[in-house]
Image (cartoon, rainbow, N blue to C red; front, top):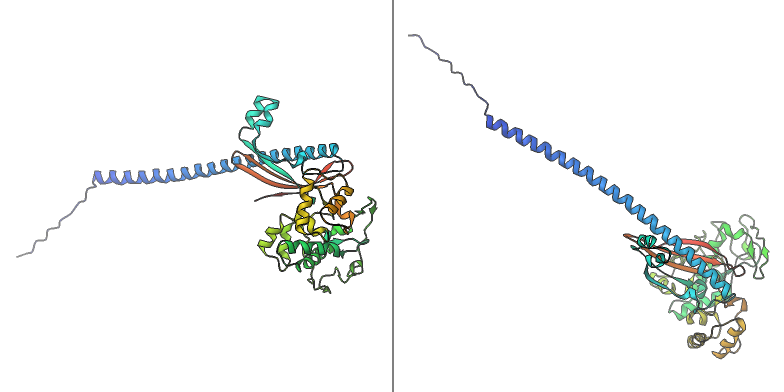
Amino acid sequence: MAATTTATTITFRPNPRRSRGVAIISALLVVALSAILVSGMLWRQQVQIRRIENQRLLAQAQWVARGALDWTRLILRSEGDTSAGITYLGGVWGVPIAKTRLSDFLGQIGDVRAEQGAATYLSGSIEDAQAKFNLRNLVSNAGPGMLQLNMEQVLAFQRLLGLLGIDGQLAKKTALQLRAGLAQSATRFQTQTSPSGTPTAVTPPQEGGVIGGSNFTDAPGLSDSDDNASVAPLQMTSVDSLLDVPGFTVEEVARLRAFVTVLPTPTALNMNTAKPEVIAAVVPGMNLSSAQAFTARRETVFFHNISDVQLALRGAGVQQPTVALDLLDVNTSYFLIHGDVQHERAQVSRTTLLYRDAQTHTTRIVWVRDQT
């Protein structure tokens, strides 16, 4: 009997519902991916627009700050014209400006411009830079290309450190650090002005030569007999440069910031604006209580000349002031301008050092530093 084999064929038919489900899922994935790509593009575009707006607002705030600085320069020049040769705390320059809307100033020249300044605020103050102890006085130019320590000023700085509870031995270290930085400065060889106002040509010393006949040499690698660093440091430009002097701490530098400054040239101390601690340090034989009595006297009548200062010093207990008269003054040439501008979400905080000529009363900008 023969065997019979039956072949069975199985046929699969596509499920319409399943196909439609896969197509829907694929379409949803494509739509989701497209939405993600489009949203990313829109987000990057929005960020770029925001960045451009911030740059525009910052530029506008900087222009407002520049206009405020020009206004400040006008005030200082006008003050110099009306009170020639005298700078005192009761002047217009000494009145700080509280946070004020810019539209309050622009409203005087039209309502349209006043509306443009509705979201802009100004605040600031003018500080007498010569009311502080100028560290640049620690080093003097005895002659062409000569840099030497001004021991009288070093002792004054030492007394100031002692009054503030800081090690007085750091005074000489600071002077050596300052001299070392000035020795490598290109401005050391520029034409300088003597106290009498006569220009004096300054010529550089020979390569590797001794500066001013002292023990300091401007050739890196040669040691200083005053235990100074062998390689000259950067030039001091601010009070924060004291952190480069071994021995100073951050807290001590912060304490000194209210009493010490660094100006481009040696300057006299304005006795009409100086603080008692600085006066007691600069005037030998004067203690802090006498300096406080001295400053209390000038609150009623400011000093018109050095003779008034000498009389006030005698009245405060200093019988024979031994300080050099060229270190004291009643006028100021250097001013610090502190200004803040808030323009919508942009803010500019800027400090500017201005120089006012004692004869013409014109002003010029020495440097500008933005606060971060």
